[in-house]
Length: 447
Image (cartoon, rainbow, N blue to C red; front, side, top):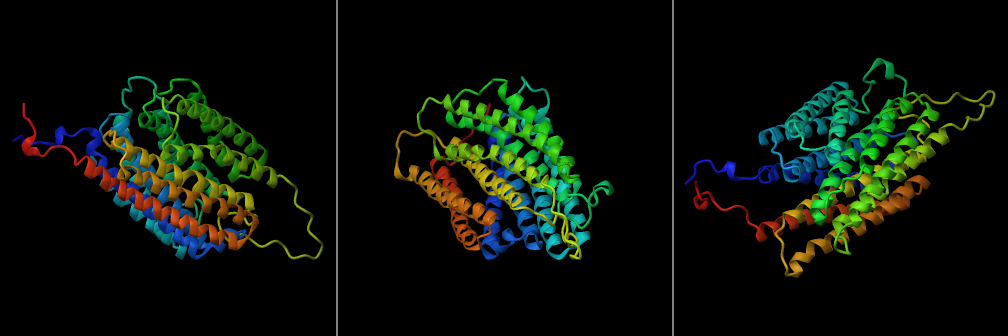
């Protein structure tokens, strides 16, 4: 018997458990966020976010979004890029820092504790550094230029900057020069577009071809998309923070061009598949990416709305109230639509779709379309139908200020997210029964 059997495992097998830890955590936080939304959906209808709204955004951003991103990247690098992680133990250390930082961040905005907010920033920044260090070896000496890896490298740059900027709803701005600005709103746009969307786009360019058995695209369109979108993103933060709406329109237009180029490259890649039909996880991913250009258009609408000159105050009228939170008092309905579309229509469905693509890639090929093999896909279809119905109710309802529509939509969102979570566990159990794993150490042939 060979005493050291760990070397017989491939890089993908060695990172499977660690990636599932983050992915399950992401789905659990998504369910908790939908419960928060179902319990108190009225915070979406107010012009100024309260502590409940801040905590919900942090739960979706750190708990669901970043946890899902970390799990997908930990799974993708060993399996898709065929490079091992620096250390599997670092993943568990990263997980501990990330969960502790997320919980402290939520607590800090609920109870307005500056010291707890600083501790949350420290834990989250430590986790982000461990993440970058653990994947640093994968970027050394690439065999050829890879746009998917370039997207991930860009997202890691934004992740490090974001981690050290602190919490978006901290009592004070991270830098003295940002005090009195809309830095929290700028931070959210910067984080979602820079970290979350860059990662999802980069992974999709590599995961989708492997999942659909199609050749990887080598056109320059994806590189132009990367350049245009990140060039516009780099200037969005100062444009939003310092309320330079004309400059924000230029940055948003540049980002819109980049997203349209990416969508054209991704769809042309999907269309080269040999089969006529797409599995449902790929359909969810394509549907989510169709919404990405909508985000840039919403940014343009929000910037144009803020450029309209305000009506002159009436003589003797009371002065406008002072801001009661980091976000501006004139938090427009289009701002809420932008946040909800990014979180609910793009981020969460894309993370779920990529996770299920990995599950399908791990399953052994079979020619027997048994009902047990089709059941996860049917459950995914039903879950996504409920989730998409909730999205189509919550976003317009919040924009129009109709509380009954928002409340009804949150029920559909909750049912859909519970379906995602249950389907994930069911698919994992079906995969283990079909492919129990590598042979035990006693039967491994030695040299």
